[in-house]
Image 1 (cartoon, rainbow, N blue to C red):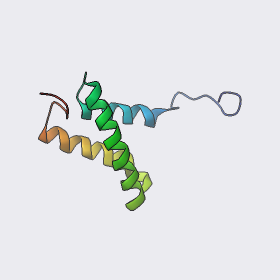
Image 2 (cartoon, one colour):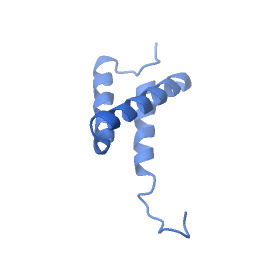
Image 3 (cartoon, one colour):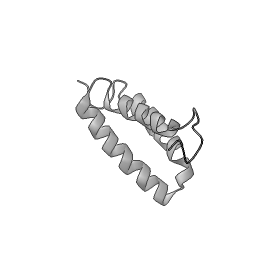
Length: 79
């Protein structure tokens, strides 16, 4: 990637943010929860981007994170 385009410190920022949302949604330390949250968040953002607007998928992911943390503060896959 480096020879074709400039290397910036902001490269991959959206992926890091989505990874944070997946880990918190799934429950920190839960591999199965992270897998389920990753699949669910991927489907959610794909459908949200198709039906509403692709520009708002990150904001919608954070809204989903906030809604789930209000309902279940420890994440999906915690006891």
